Image 1 (tube, rainbow, N blue to C red):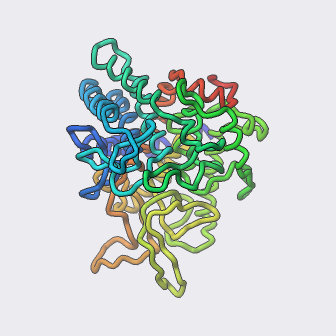
Image 2: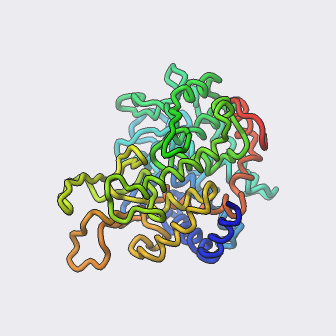
Image 3: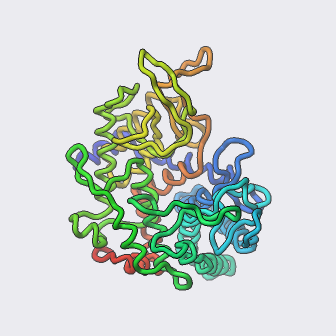
Amino acid sequence: MPGEQNAVSSNFGEERLDALQRHSFEYFLHETNSINGLVADKSQPGSPASIAAVGFALAAYPVGVERGWMTRADAVDRTLKLLRFFWDSPQGTAPDETGYKGFYYHFLDMNTGRRAGLCELSTIDSTFLIAGMLAAAAYFDHEDEDEQALRTLADALYRRVNWAWACNGAATVTHGWTPETGFLPYRWSGYDEATLLYVLGLGSPTYPLPTESYAAWTSTYEWKTIYGYELLYGGPLFIHQYSHIWLDMRGIQDAFALEKGIDYCENSRRATYVQREYAIRNPLGFAGYGENFWGLTASDGPGQTTRRIKGIERSFFDYVGRGAPYGPDDGTVAPWAVAASLPFAPEIVLPSLQHFRDVYPQVTGEYCFRCSFNLTFASDEEGDVHPGWTSPYHFGINLGPVVLMCENYRSGLLWRLMRSCLYIAAGLRRAGFTRGWL
């Protein structure tokens, strides 16, 4: 396989990979508020800020410095603006605050920084925000006044998060809370993107999760055999990527992984292959699907509608967590999600990225790939030269993984930074991880 990987890499080209990563990175330079540093959820005018997108930005700025796409001084300035904003922003139970108990609302007004609409205080999006802060603190290690202040603020913001409160009296963590109705009825159970949440919660020196929380979470895992691959199941690709952006899971194992004889990086590799195999088999007969056309994940879609296409009644969705092989699936694929699997399976990711870039120019926009596209859904635009539907927008939570996973593949930068974070190591050990770099 290594020989195959090198051959594929030379076909795609380092220059094209660099352009893919850089164009994704530029979202975090331009779709921001220059005063408070907040990052827009998507490129649609009037979009609120996404705290997860902010977390990705905070981790991406060190990549920009290392790659020469921005100066260290600019990166420090942007990072400090964000950290000072979150530290000074109002925390409380009033409906228009920015956060509560150290967590933050999923979406914030780009200008005021207050809660946007009736969104929830999000435990998982706060996790990605805090992880970005810790990544920045690990990278900006100079002893000048600004970088010292940056590290102090990042540490204080992490210590302020009350992870235990978010359990609401049980072992697992709730999805969130609103001042109108209290805790959401959903909890982080079943294998999903919450590995990082539990690791950060367990590693907290101030308000940690109970030790039993991790075992309670893993007790809900589903081990399956799909297309000959044995793996811990999660349908959408992002489930197998988001925590791995920050956590180097190569060679380390918890009790579950040890019992199955794998690590979670290998599990993500298998999940990537399952996605491609599903597209090759194409059981629902969607246009385009094949060896180099795959990538089902949480993404934008054509809209909640039903259409009869070539004699088949098809149901289409808006933004939803699409997954393989059990669905939902409406023919919508997300090339960015393919790129975010680069560290796991470059030998199948790189030719697919080349295919998307060369054959479907409609999915390439100002910032690398648009969110998603669907060749089965007929376009309503008269004279449209490209078949199907393409999302008009770029999303920060799509482009962040492209920047960071490309970098983990190319240099391992974010993995190295997070391995040096004592809180990450402590959280992994409390979760029962051993071996490897630990």
